[in-house]
Image (cartoon, rainbow, N blue to C red; front, side, top):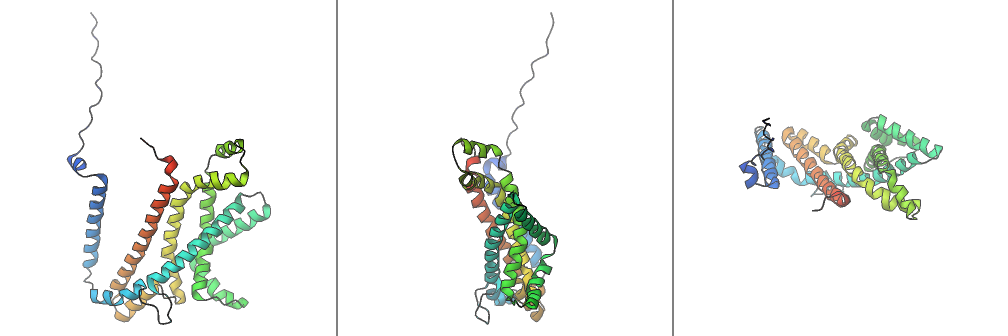
Amino acid sequence: MTSFPPAPQPPQPVAEPLIKRLLGFRTRLYLTWAGMLGLFGGFFLSFDLKFSIILDKLPNLLGIALAPNGFLQGAALTLFLCLCSIVLSSLLGFVTALARLSKSAVAFGIASFYASFFRGTPLLIQILLIYLGLPQLGVVPGAIAAGIIALSLNYGAYLSEIFRAGILGVPHGQHEASLALGMRDRVIFWHVTLPQAMRTIIPPATNQFISMLKDSSLISVMGVWEVMFLAQSYGRSSYRYIEMLSTAAIIYWLLSIGLELIQARMEKHYGKGYVRRG
């Protein structure tokens, strides 16, 4: 009689580690962050920081206290610069993306030239060209206005590619299905294509906004009283650079975390149609 080998047994599920059963994912995530913050704080405490200097200058760095001219300073001014630049660069990037997707040779040429120039030259040179070069043409922008213009033009060029990629990433079948339902092209774009493209656009766009937040420190070369300018000034006057630069780094980090939280909310909103429901 022919003997057959025993049928293979299905793999047995591996017992889940005890720590995963006792602690959920979110709890383990918070514990990991707490551990990393502990290591991070211990590293900076090893520099023998003088917290009295930090506490004395912190209101100015945060922008709680106004500048001598009565205007914003510190983190409040940095946030103001970034918010203005985010709005203007988003509008400019969106218009440029539409121009590059259009069938007009003139619109495509202007948009592609603009994107090529501002992506191909350093932001610092663009800031100085606007702030120091425009006065030779009879236009004298203020330092804050020049910074906002430079940030908007620079990041608008990068955002145009993000918007264009997001729009092109929507399957063409969505457009054809909408046409079959009797919808017009303009309605299809605003109510079908763009909402689906936002799911792809939001992560890289927010990444650019965080980079903009950090690059706003370059505006300090024009004497604008934002976080980096104040940190350098206070560090130079007190000979305690580590305290001031560390405080500035933490302020930038906290502001970027705020943008990350906004990104998470927007991703959740535009990703509703992709969430698997039980």
